[in-house]
Length: 105
Picture 1 (tube, rainbow, N blue to C red):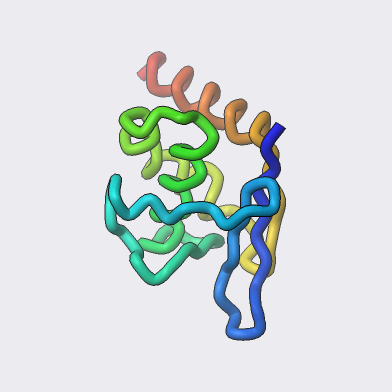
Picture 2: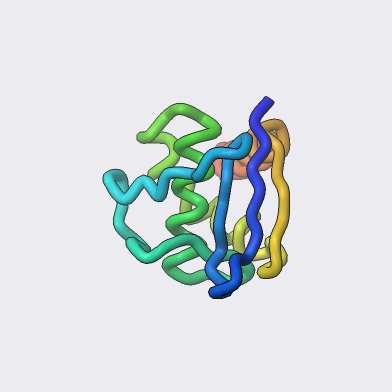
């Protein structure tokens, strides 16, 4: 199971890894923030993080693009700015919940 982890470096940049390896920004899918990831609010850095997390975890670029803004507000905007960990299972559970809510709407 994949483990996603974020920590701040000495320059206060958010460094995100997946199972110990750098998480790809995925600017090829949508270029919200070419300078990096962020969390704890609803801006462009959190949007890029949401997209990258979903693309990596789901392995489905189309679905990641479709869901990333909703996932940003539901999950990424609430992550602590100083650092966090998420499991693949936690991300998939959040996606299942978001998809279920969208189907009921």
